[in-house]
Amino acid sequence: MADEEIKQKILDELKAKSKNKSKFYFSDLQKMTGMKPREAKKIINVMVTDGDLVYWSSGSTTMYSLPGAGKQSAAEGED
View 1: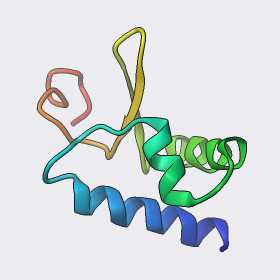
View 2: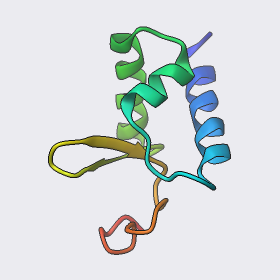
View 3: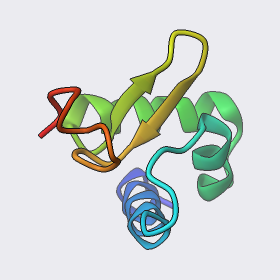
């Protein structure tokens, strides 16, 4: 599968699941790609750089979400 197809698959799955959950662990995204962690990390980092995904960190945990998703997005300046 080409990188663009993988990116679109991730976005589609996140949009479908965003009704129940706004933030996802790296392992969740990696499972969506079906790739090894290092390969998936490269694509996910490109998506963050392109603005398709955003990082969220509690200090000990890093999660990913769609831009503007979640209850705290306005408070965190993501809107």
